[in-house]
Each structure stands twice: as C-alpha cells, then as structure tokens.
Image (cartoon, rainbow, N blue to C red):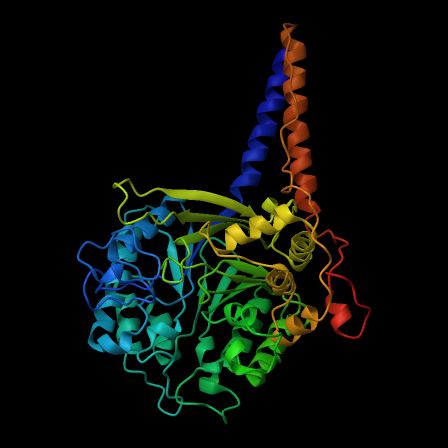
Length: 511
C-alpha cells in the first residue's frame, strides 16, 4: 500500500513539473540574411574575398561575402528544427550594395520571404514571424526621403509578406508606409512592436535635420506601448539599427573619442535621447529591445538612461564580416513575463577546398549560464555578467566566442576588453564613454565559469519502498529547487562595475 501511495505521489509531481515547463514558449531570433542572388558570379558582393565571385564558390558561404541561397535555406531549416512558436527577424534581408543591382531588390526579397513561408507552413501549427526592415533593405542603402515617405520598394515588400502569409492585411498597411507595425504573439501576452530605427540615424539619406518626429514613429511607439500596458501585455521592441556605439569603429579608434562623433555611433543624439525617454518611461512593460545590424551577437543591461531595459543584438546569417552564420533561440515565461536561456546556434564556415559535408548547425552556449550567472535576461543578470567579463578570463573568452559565433575574431587586448565590459553594462554612447574612463581591473587567472553538475548518486540493493521514497524525494527536491530558482531570478548581484547610479553622480567603481 505504501509503495502504491509513493508511486502515485511521484507521478503527480512529475505531471506538475511537466506542466510548469510547458508554460514556456520558444522564440527564434535571426538577423542579417543578406541574400546575394549573384553569389558565384562576377556580380557577387565581396568585401575582401574574391572567392564568392567564382562559379566554384562554396555553397556554405564564404568569409567576406554575403549569403548564397543555400545558406539562407539551411539557416531557416535549422531555426525551424528548434521548434519555435514565433520567429523574430531583425532586418537586412538583402545583400550589401544593392544599388548596383537595384532591379533585383524585389525578386531577392521575395526569394527570402518564399523560403521562410514555405518552410514555416510545413509545420503544424505554423510559427508566426515578425520582421523589421534593415538599412540594406532600402535601395540605395540608408535612403528614405522623409518628405516623400512612399518608398518605392516598401509597397512591394509589404505585398510580398502579405501574400506569403507573413503579415496580416492591417500589418501590411502600416509596414508599407515606413516599416513599423504591431504584432501580438498568439498564445502569449507578449507583443512585438516593430519600428524602423534607420530614420533616426546619422547615415540616413537625404539628411534629416528638422523633423521632431519623422513619419510619426515616436507617436506610434508611445501609443503601442500604452495600449500594451493597458492590456497587461509585455513588449519586445524590434528594429535593425541599435541606439549604441559602433563597436568596430570605437575599438579600432586611435584614442577613446568623443561620444558625439557621428562615425562612432548609429543614432543621432537628438533621437537617441527621445527614444531612451520613451523606453525608460515604459520599462515595466518592455522586456527587451532587439536589434541586428552589427553582425555580432551581444547583449547589454542598457543602464538607467534606458530604464534598465535589456538590449539584445542578434548575430548575422551572412558571413560577410568573418563571423560564422548564427541565430539564437530563447525561452519566454509567459506567466512571469521573462525572457531567459538564450542559446546560440551556428554553422562553422568550411574552407572552400575542404571535402563536402552535411550542413551541421551546432548548438552553442546558453546566456547567461555560460558566464556562471543564473537568472532571466534582466538588467541585474546582465550587470552580473559584465562583472564576470571584467574579472574572469574564462567568462571573457566565452563572450568572445559568442560574439563571433565561434569564428576567429582576431586579438582583443585589455582596451578591447574594457570596451566589451562597458558595452555590456550600457547602451547609450555617452554612458559607454564615461564607463571607459574608469580603469579596468587586472584580469584574473581563473578558469572558465564552472557549471552546475549533477550531484553524485548511489544505489544499493534494498527494499522497493526505500527506493520509491528516494525517487520521490529526488523529484520533489528538483521541483522545489527549480521553483526557488525561478522565484529568485530578480536577485541583485553585487559587482565591481560602473553602475547607472554612478553615472548619475554617485561613486565610481573599478571595472
């Protein structure tokens, strides 16, 4: 009788554990496809490698070149194999330098849309997709005449996405105006607010120096956030160009420059400040800001200027900047309104002369666990990660591997490391530069962060009742531990980094 009771209790506990796990929703994040329909011809885009202009160019893709169609299709298949309920694309579907091939822009965009739609609709139920526009989706690059906002390509893009079932009719109506719309993710209380941050950047052509609210996008964003708040929904802001520094340019600058230098930041200061105020005011509603553009996977606690709303920058499928093609998945806890366990997936670019092999997308590190930090993707968690980057060599090496998707990223000295720490703590260029003024503490010689390992188990021949009791205790203990961890995700971590309060006039800590 006791054995029967024990086994019923164990079964009940397992059912509860499965139910808790089932409450999570998987999200897929991908960016910078950069399809080059001319890959393998002399019209291919090449940054530093002529190999992609050859008929024998590798179908895997080539460092220094944009993506062949086979790489796009493989990345889509690999992403869908992770079984996401919703897919979030941070823009740049088209190759670089489309101005040379302007007539091909619409057909190339349609090729990517068709590949996504066809693959997604083979899955039941099909995942949804929300996408932003990138600067390379406009031809010429960065071109959007704010005085005549009917961009010649946007209507065609919107119709393509609507035809392929990727945008509803109402979404397509606002998308074709300027590239923004709102998507409520079905089965969740999560909303994706898609905006077009390119119109707030220094690189916009023609130059915009007068508009307080270009195309009414600030008003659109404020209304979307207010509506989400009233409906008790959480929001991910999705766009392409992030409101931060140009990491590549800053790390290679001769000296730490002024934060006002236009070449070293994306947003104009005027629009960055207004956008930051909107995000900070809605920080109880927004769970993350998601961008692409940099071709590197990174994340930031953002700082108080942005209301401590985390920023996530999605890596690129295109290997044009010498990264391995990559995307990431994450778990969404709808009950708690938290994003956690971001896992990178990547494809190692093969040398063109190597023998053929199957497409092998590898499962990479999970953030933040790879840094020895537990918790959801909140500012507290990411500040703790930044602290590990400043003091733990193993953690910093993990960051570099994730940043480059396990490709060789070249040397990163103490100056580069210092920038990485500040970049992980803050989004605003002004905050990053103030953080850089602080002396980086000497790196430790500690090894990579240890990961929790299962406790040792032992067994011996004994009574069934004793074994049953042990099994129930283990299951119950695991469930209780999981609940405790989930309830403590908001814990604060003490660390030696520059804090948002420090930048507002407080004391200075060593990073």
